[in-house]
Length: 412
Image (cartoon, rainbow, N blue to C red; front, side, top):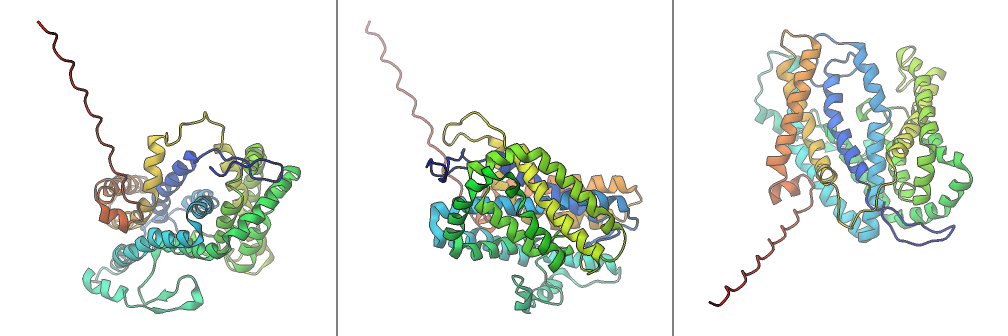
């Protein structure tokens, strides 16, 4: 993505402008979470808010193909965006901007959206539960500090950040990054030329990712990854993904690295279907399973980035595809909105006498329709709601061009 246009072997090469395909990919991952979280309604292995009476192991297998790369991709792309933001605003300006654009929707969403899935969980588990939503909401907000679970520093009997764990981690990572951003960027500049001489160095981040997952354990609550593995994806996005030399290498290596990711992911499969708990056990099989999964995630992300990053015709500055512009702005609001909507529809649908495929299709279709309508008509169009959902103020409309005066009538 765009940057300064310095040349030289050890210097930064010009970027190629904002990568619209990453905006679209980010929004597609967010919308894909509707499919993923709906699938958890029918999974036997996950303690989702609302569960269907019948479940199937097929859901768990299919979900794994998304878990291995989707959330890591969001953190890596967020790190790439942080590089641009710090370059424009400086570390202090970056920290202030992220506190507003992430902190405000985090507080708003946690207080007003996250209680609903928890309340519906209680109602689904106990048909006799009749506490009003207002009374439960007050109990949900009864919290106490818990610094041992950093960066999740509040806890309560019913309190949770729910799906907004992603926003909690991203905000924490941004604030941790700001003081060291200049040194990290300088180190990345020095390291980038070595990648061109030693292509295998592109796989180096797979090693710490494998170690973090294996030694610290995988966390089911955070889409199967250890929370600090996401920090590595974020840091790699900040350090490397914005350099044209790294992008060129990623394009060349995309296919073999992607194939390696598939092989590593397949190698982790036996540990997930047999033996001790693969997320936390210290048996050799569990440790190897977590390590292979961590390494596979890096390979999948690199492969996908390289396959999507193809040369395009130069665009005039500001000439950006409408779909890319729309989806780039919509990603965070859609993420904040999606899970309460999915849980609400699941709560109403699981009691139907219908095949699982029908229920799944109804929940997904209705949820997608509702969150898109809520975004378009309930979030995007007013300054207050844009602020609450982390969006920048709408650009002022350009004045309509003045119509020229008609030519004078000819003299008679």
